[in-house]
Image 1: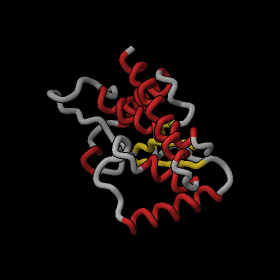
Image 2: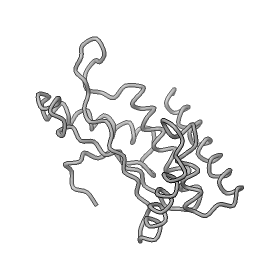
Image 3: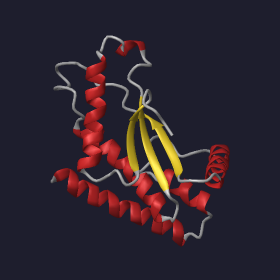
Length: 168
């Protein structure tokens, strides 16, 4: 129930972000960037003027392509097996909050009228520090994210994929 309530708060936040972008009468690319650059969405410092220009160009190019706008974020590589921090291979509350934030981005962009799909792209094999973790544990960790996405009905604009899976 807690995460379902959090999803509804996130949905309203996404709709508010889209409404603010629409009220500013921005181009679609500028509206998308305004969503991505909001303090409740982004992490870290705001983009520089040069960074904003580069990002706007990338968004405009992506919008010109056929199909949905696809935003892929490399994230959640593996589950630390430290016994004092984690129990098992299931996503914890902080990680579920992170996928809800990614869903918020996609929902806000969809509310602007742009078909958007956010992909949380996992790579549990890239980092040498994870090579000792067996493949089944990594797969179970990824599956737990997909189960949360399904259970919270976030799959309308969010997908969790492993980088080794077939991609579009």
